Image (cartoon, rainbow, N blue to C red; front, side, top):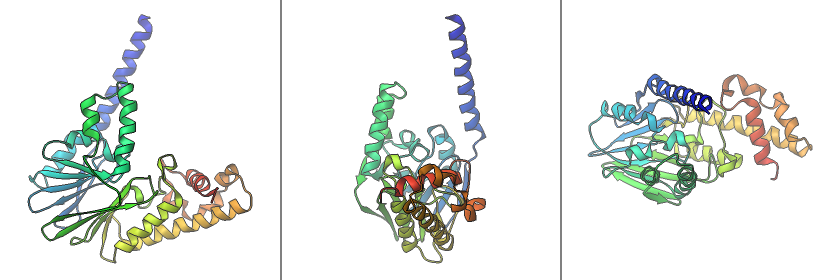
Length: 299
């Protein structure tokens, strides 16, 4: 028993040290997009920061352990309080810091499906005693919307637009009309194959439709903040759409020919023209072929 306890202690210390090291190694980079809009890059989804007349609107918040660094980075931009925090969807690398930002000054906003998904996660985490009830409460968006929502700040109109069954079932794209900046959340992985979360309502059809919605909102001068990847633009977004539509057609052709999941996943020719650019550690070429097959099989 003593040996087991000792081994557990060593494991606990190792994991704790690893998490601490990860946090210490992460640098929050601040990139100015316009005089009012900034993109913060750290570990997880890209954060958007809009500096309004009196307050700040923030988009996503990465992981909980990075909140002090993120707050410090925002302080280098402005000392104005964060009045609003919008979650583009429910994944932890975009909502993990909610409880650290959600206070008397800051209201968390998201599509209603985001709140539902986080409530489900909280129930499991509370049962496993991984979080306390106050943290669970503060993780949740306080204001939700079903379709679209508008916020106004001086000359700026901020549009939160729900896109259906794309990356998840609760995605929102945020467009700043006066600044001409579009934050697409994980409905756009610039320069990478996308993660389409089929288990949480995502779909290939919805994902491509969401990309096209972003392209419709944008013009040649629009600055596009992707959920992951570097700051982008409409030209790159259109190329990305073309890539996914080509893969879509190839996978559908294989499905109609009666090919199995295993055959499509193994068929490197389907994605070969794009792999050098888009294949990455989290979503490999094989994984994107698998995702497309699973999502399109029953069309």
